Image (cartoon, rainbow, N blue to C red; front, side, top):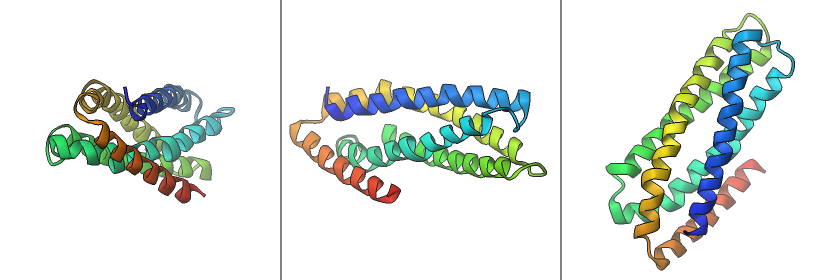
Amino acid sequence: MDPMLEELYQQHRRATEMLTALRAAVRRLAQEGAGGPGLLGELSACRETLQTEVASHFQEEEAALFVVLGRRIGAEGGPIAVMLEEHRELRQAQAEYVAGLAAVDAGPGEAGPEALTAAAERILQLLPPHIEKEEAVLFPMADELLDEGEWAEAHRLWREAQAVAAGASA
């Protein structure tokens, strides 16, 4: 298996760990309210993972793997189109999560907890099956179809996407 795929699988494991933490934090929010001890820190840690690791994972896939694999299988329909649409939906849910968390952090009187919970539930609904589709369909397809030259190009594009992400977070 190509090292890029191995890294993507590892990123999925970290995202799955974040989902477990997010699920627990949302449950605490419902039970304890926004003032629960340490709850804002837990919700903020999930936001950080969404804004850094998950966002860069999407960008790296879109800029590298999807480009190269898309030449083989097409990007306008099929699995790549599905993944791109799901990335769009997840980015929207992430933005709503960030806004909801900011409202919760601002204090009472805001509709923050409801907005935050709705966005978190949307992420919890979308991200696990997205990961499953990539791991069951897209990654094995790339592993089977891409040749050495295509992997080399994907790695070059991957490094460029990582450099862009690093520059954006600096």
